[in-house]
Length: 496
Ligand code: NAD
Image 1 (tube, helix red, strand yellow):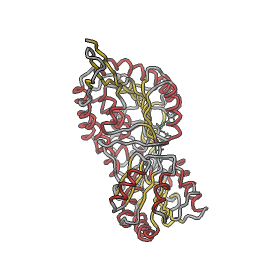
Image 2: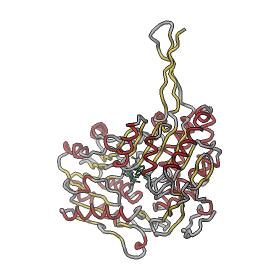
Image 3: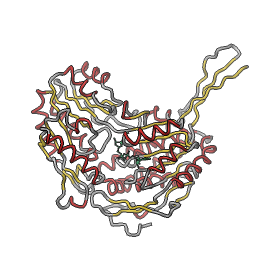
Image 4: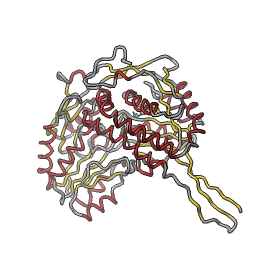
């Protein structure tokens, strides 16, 4: 139905399908309280929908539904779970254009990037449809001649999921697909900024015939009461969270205290190293392509660009040229490479980091300011920025920068640069440009990060393990590792 009071969104064809309900036990419900909250377009500030403002009670209803559905879902055949995921992949693929348009209205990224994310999101449905039928057991050597050991892998149970706004469809399917493939049931709370995308994903699962209670959606403006229920309710056996390190640390702590399994995909502070033997122009082009994806609002976005002294001029001049040409604006406009940031707080954080760096001696070669003139005045925009002369005493050197800012650091000592890159509490992604095989291997082995791109700025795919070390998280999503996170290992000892 068309939402009352919803503003027209350029090219958004999905709004007519939106129903303002949560999805619990196979039906679309309002919040028990009847409360709702509004969702806005970050490029225009216009209201684009309303969704239920759920509470702890709603989360408990959803957990009860997931718990009741677990017995039957976990004992369906792997092939039937695979069939459901294939059907979801097919429907998401058919619907990709309308999903991409919804994403651009709600989250702001350029339409081309939204299309790429929907494809990435659908890839998880297909990959885990395939993986569902590859969960196997083992027949192990026993301790006695009259004994047999059989190992069985079974779904962990009800999974509580919490997802962020920056990748509002793929972060859902990256969790839901392996969980459902493994035979788990789930309750998911999306970010308050992007509940419409989440609802669109659940509509797909409903339409392909997911049994009632298997996948449940709870939306809420205040996530805390839901998080409390997710981490304490004994029926929840696992928490799967993607978001900031601070929130992930808190939720993982409570969940682990209640002996739940935990997977947390958290923040990052990726180094990007240009070695002396690299081609600085190629590296700068790679940096420009990567840094401004999703307006820099990506956990794997490069946050420290270490460029060897001799490559400074070539690297920086190429990057200046590229960054100057990046068009900022509403993601529906042709040629826009950088959309809005998620909200005013995000703009203020980026502006604070850039201002701090400039006050300590960095130089903004491009950008370095908020965009507040028409047509930017109604949204949350920050100019694509290139900062040169960044040093380790600046906030931007340590704090996650969730914005379109490329900080360049000049280094002289090649033997030291891996230590500089590793000098962070984060450990998600790192990037290296080199044309020397030994340097590539040394960097790959020496960097304390879960993902390392070697002359590659897009080391992600449904088939590849994604996740961090240190404060960037615990566990992996994607690949065959991703389904293992939703499986228990059970040993059977049989005496003959
Ligand atoms: P956030 O931690 O503020 O929010 C993430 C989710 O947690 C949202 O759904 C939010 O509602 C919920 N949340 C917040 N407080 C909660 C609480 N007390 N209880 C329960 N839920 C709570 O992060 P964000 O700003 O939405 O997302 C950006 C962060 O996510 C960045 O740090 C980014 O690096 C990280 N991220 C990591 C990955 C990854 O795979 N490692 C992927 C995308 C984003």
